[in-house]
Image (cartoon, rainbow over all chains, first blue to last red; front, top):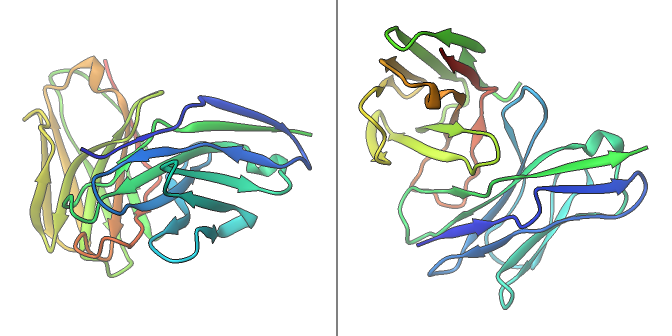
Length: 114
Length: 115
């Protein structure tokens, strides 16, 4: 069965510092991996995805994520955090052999302090 | 705006009421989804529709009844709900669930409170 874990409920970082939001996954086959962001009172917005190819994926708003197959991880990163990056971040995984399901993590709340 | 619109944004209902949530997408997608978002829990996939046919039903109680009259509209009919059903209900769409590498587009959600 596929699953995804976001080990941190909350990440705090100062503006201008690099940020990392962690995600690990478990699937039986080669995964499709996604990151979404949710701002207050809004739905989820797509940030980036890994399907195949280069392990470093670049997405919206300066975010990037690195796929690490040996560690089954897909951590979200940004070189320099902005206060406006404060939001709830969700990692999601889809097993291409697993039908229609996309499994989401519980989310990590990012606080960026000025 | 993401192209997926949900109404109402907020809903308070009693346990004996019947109400419906509405979702509309203007993206030309073929697949639509209902998710339940509760605090500090992973998003729960409730239903998936592909080309107006239900293709996934994740053991959701029968007090939740989905309807997909066409590929642009999705409803969630609610009756005799319980207080633990209070949550944010999110609608999403994608090009097709068969295209596994496509991302989903979400509406803003309906905040449901059952009293």
